[in-house]
Image (cartoon, helix red, strand yellow):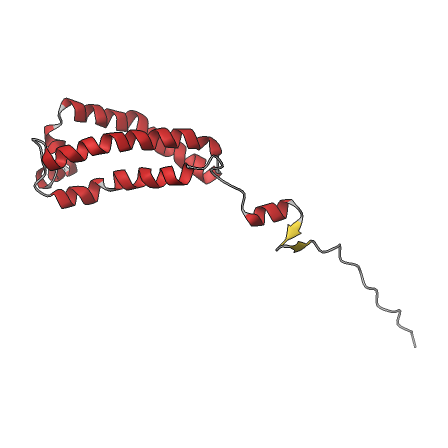
Length: 143
């Protein structure tokens, strides 16, 4: 029902579903959707191996989206509401760009300065305090 409403309201391409668009949908279902789960795990657990899959995901999406948007603006299935389509599909351009920026460095999850200090046995940038000495109170005289 939602797909029918969306295709009638703003996205005739979704209704027409030419062969190339169906192929793009299958790429999304079989490749992109599983990547979301993998990426969530990797980012939560700070796993640097996510860098290459993230680059692949982002470049695939950034390859498909100009084709989809060109069809939405100028093709035989052009939208009557291009600003709405841009607002909705814009996330599929913005998010891969942000992801590429995030994983650009080989060190995807660099150690924070605080973590480095803790690992070195330093707290708050100062040398760790020596073990507290027990101060014994002088013996009280019994009366």
